Image (cartoon, rainbow, N blue to C red; front, side, top):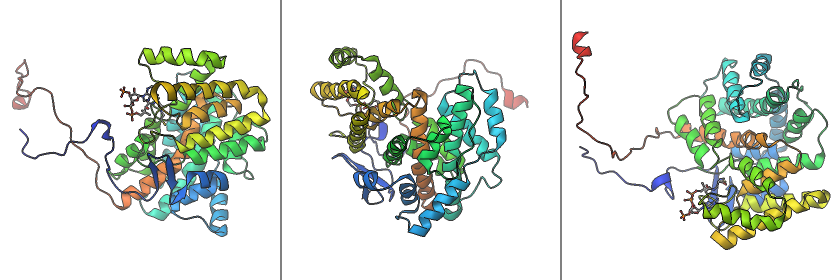
Amino acid sequence: MESISYIKVPKGLENVLVDKTKISVSDPEGKLIYRGYSIEDLADNSFFEEVAYLILKGKIPTHEELSDFISNLKNEREVPKEIYDLFKKLRGTYLSPIDLQKIGLSLLAAYDENWYVQEPEALFLKTIKIISKLATITANGYRIVFKNLEPIQPSNELLHAENFLYMLTGSKPNPFFAKLLDITLILYMDHDFNASTFTTRAIASTLSDIYSALLGGLSALKGPLHGGANERATEMILKIKDPEDAEKYILNKLAKKEKIMGFGHRIYKKFDPRSEIAKKLFMKLVERYPKYDNLLKIMIKFEEVMKKERNIPANVDFWIGPLYYAMGIDIPLYTPIFAISRIVGWSAHYIEQIQDNKIIRPKAEYIGPINLKFPYERKFIEKL
Ligand SMILES: CC(C)(COP(=O)(O)OP(=O)(O)OC[C@H]1O[C@@H](n2cnc3c(N)ncnc32)[C@H](O)[C@@H]1OP(=O)(O)O)[C@@H](O)C(=O)NCCC(=O)NCCS
């Protein structure tokens, strides 16, 4: 039937280079680089707004560029009141917070007269709007739908991470927690052609609008093998009360061929550099809040057992989930928080994709039957 000879690639596109990017690269040796800068360097020396600008524009902002970027982000925090009205109607439904973000993002498009833009500068400005408003939608949407609370007016004083915590709790954020959140947002911001970014780029490649592409990114991120892992890993870790019970728990799961959430990675086989940083953050947290020492011991035990049994390292989600837990954040928010950061990466990939575009359209090897005949002859077309 087929006259062309196709190139067969491994399932899951494992080890396949599908395109070029200048945004970020993850390396099996345990390296992650954003626009030339290592994740260790950025996590230690920069903050969300600087890294977001770097990812989007490809350069460290000047003092003036950064101050404009920050004030634009602050000015875009409010969302149409109608979004909150709709959220109120969703109380008591089976909605997940990621789907709440999807509804919020769709509504942002509905209230955006210029929802379809393709020029890089217009897209940069659109992205600022989306990054800022998605954080508001997430925090206030969670308050409204899941906590039965009223939305909080975003602050136009605070930086992005601080303001997110402020909207979530309604009180001035603990600066230590705000810094922890800020660093984790940097860790989550981009990761070359991961599943959600590839989804975003596939949608971008059809020249669909940025909102639609980001909605695709959110949908892919939700899955437990991707962004959903931070929530599942935390739920799993919290089931263990004593470090001594961790080994039995893991062995039991492995014997049943179940995956241990928060372990393993398509690219990082030795270690995930983001996980190493998040682990350091957790240790810093324990220095200030010793009551989490037992949790730390349980998590270290998980790492030891997974190393011994399968030689599989922990990934970023294993350490970030419990970190958020110790900061007092509700578990259903962990993947949405991942999204409020990764939206920066997805947006940069959208812009990169459409600037040098070819529609992403692979081919499947058909293994089903051919030449079957439908059992009823009705001749609908003939009779038209
Ligand atoms: C991330 C992940 C999807 C990568 O998948 P992948 O590159 O396709 O790798 P595979 O799932 O094929 O794993 C390779 C081997 O390691 C095992 N493995 C990988 N992750 C594992 C885990 N978390 N627990 C137990 N075994 C695991 C697989 O069972 C497989 O073993 P096999 O060769 O004997 O069949 C996978 O490691 C996973 O499901 N992890 C748990 C979910 C998670 O934490 N996701 C967040 C990633 S940041």
